[in-house]
Image (cartoon, rainbow, N blue to C red; front, side):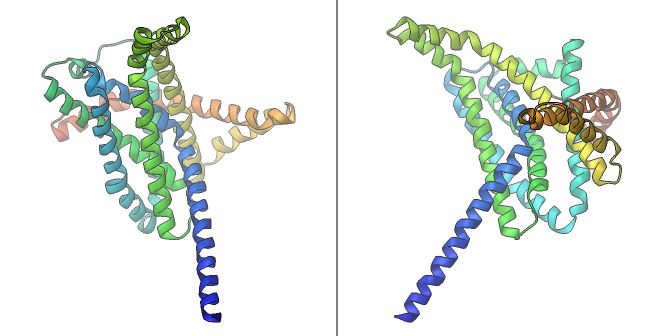
Length: 325
């Protein structure tokens, strides 16, 4: 009997450790996922364009195909690569993060530049031209999954850098939780956004009350404004997160002047407002300065990418010049 009680005690202890580990994984996953917020917002704002022009009945199947491709990108390709990188070449994580941050700055700045100085993009226009629906669907899904790979690589790298060093399996499990959680959140949101106008039309046609029809009409009319808002927030988030990654990376690599200066400004502002607003004030100043830095860097990168790296890449691969979406 004493042996059985000892065994049960050991099992209870193991269960407590396991429960604590699950809590740790959940906590680390939430923290790591929040670090990738800018990329996640951008992903959710970008993806709806890939179902533009299709019949309503094909929208959700297309999103599901992209979701499966995204999970494959994150879990089968990027997660093992990230763990190998973390184990054998951790010094590469910061430069890779900065490379991803520079991409975010470029993309955000390119969107603002395009808004200020509108110009046609022949490749985008050709992609949006609806031809054979079956071929177009395959092309759109492949394009979405390729774009997702770039964004997923940034998400996984940012998340990995935010996970405290520990047991290998716990780091891998945390990264997997982040991957699955972010993917389901992004594409679940995308599916809701894409079908929102259909829901609105259904309510307009079937609602028994004027209030219900008014809500449906509001959903239909509000979707373009929501998409515009998401695009604006996504652009701001890209510049903020991209600038933050670059500045933090410079500090890690031994050039902390800009990073320290911005945080000193944030502290000064935080001390000048009521205590209950101090945290938000410090964050706002830091995010604004990171965003301004990201915008400036992105603007500098536009000619470098479009006139240098892009044509060189196209010449080496025989393909199209990479462009921001």
